[in-house]
Image (cartoon, rainbow, N blue to C red; front, side, top):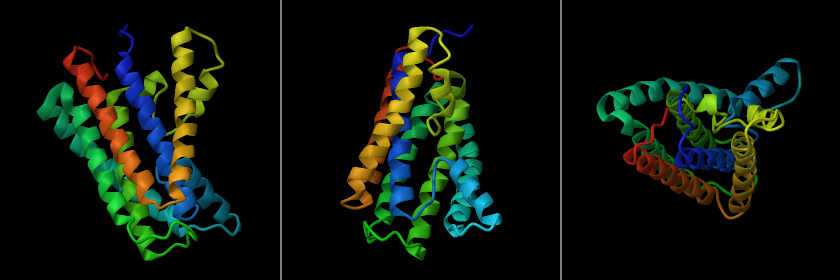
Length: 225
């Protein structure tokens, strides 16, 4: 059996889960009823619309398409990073994500903090963030985090697993994932009151911090998967 995941990896993945909360606060509250990391919500919106419900579909369609494109590109990039950097591919991928989120924050300049009507400008930001989150999901799958209840973009399994019993450390890790998402969403919503650029910049910094945690653990002998 594999040894338990080193604590810094757990902290890093919980931070990434909080980043998802921040990003979705920007997306849903600031970009117009669309998710850029949790594709379940978008697919449900599309299904409801097919049944005749009056819901926006342009945003979810853009998000799903961009997310898929990001996953395709992310898979190729992380594969090359793994071949080039060995065990250090994970922090490299996270540093890249942090940089791209900073770019997305710059793209959000000029967007109003209120009245999230879908405009071409908003579609650009939606597509950019969704593509980044698509690549993120590939990164986490490649890192093997899913088997540790730390997928970073959903908390359904973590919430259910927290009440299934088991070692205290496992239960705490699952609960920390849920709390991370809630805290991230709250921070994102608060910062969104000023401008979308602020929560996106926070997300960028947090991802870089997560990458640094992973890099330090790898240097000290830990393994990301």
